[in-house]
Image (tube, rainbow, N blue to C red; front, side, top):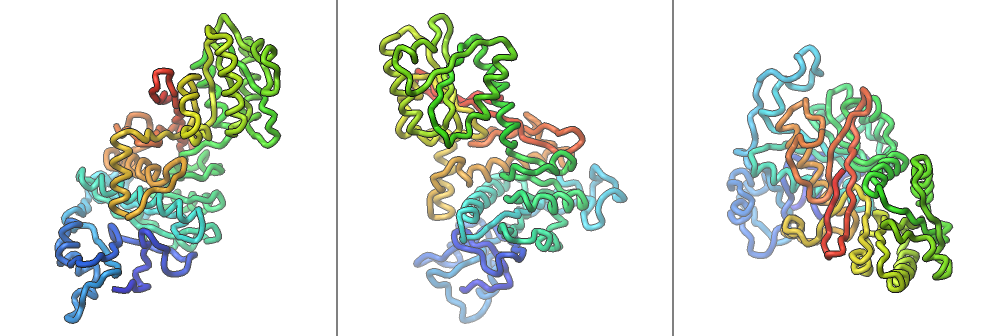
Length: 459
């Protein structure tokens, strides 16, 4: 069966059809590529739907001469039994306060309407990453369905050059309870205005430059800008490493932007009257050793996140601790260091490394293995080798917000402990910015212990 343009659907695993700037929406759970010897009965059974439901989603199947062929694409609908019937119970806002196109039904007693407005295409890296993210959202919806939570999901392809205002003209956009997007900061303003007008919550999954969060209470932003993030990490560093002697190592990296962090940390240490030392990767062994305290535990901070300089630092520290075995040395790194575990893991354990991050996925956990396997089963390929894993990011964010809306309705604000969900990769707890929206304030320290364990400290 060939795809008809009127469906304007996202094909999970291949590109979008129709023009990239136009809104594209789906009410189907999945699109299935037919394999050899598969039957209509078998496809319906494997997806938990009836043959009639499958044929309703694929009208060509009703034709007398229809034959299912290998390579055809088949729309997989949600089971009708899983769709909640909207009720007319009183919501948190009165009918006069609510936009005319939004029903008065309590979101907690019906299917939650979710819109995804991201670059969902196969044209470049942004599109492929966001397709994987969207697949994670679909997997979260599937898991929630198994817990009795129904979701009506729509998806629009909104690439970088698209006018998101055109997408927002789609009648289904104004009916959403939650919109996930956009990816690009230039599209935030239009979506923010639309969300405020129609009383829709917006989850901004990646865009950092979004000043509208400070004034629009409908917006939820996952990532902080660099200055805010640095200040938060510095505050947690000072709390965690009270009583430590800080040693800053200049790595002679003229391309590094980590000076913003190290300079800010040094200023805070000075304001608190806490002493620190500065040394250099090119220093002699004797001069290098003088930077370390023999009375206090030491914590080492480099002014670069690059791997070559890190490896030189490890070599110097190994030599130092071999000559001074009683020295206590820990290291405080950067999120990029999680990409180097394949080569540096033993040194991470040896030097008690702490890495600040907004996410962490334990590759050895059972939950990680299950979601990776489920992704492989559903989409016939592995997730991208990227940090963070985009499918798991989509799963965590969608599960957290949809369950929160199901539990609390319009009163959901993403506060710590509201949902009772332990993330696989991305911890979320939001705090309000004055009278505006909400920003995720969760920060992790990923700790590689000398006992060859990895633990996470969640602030």
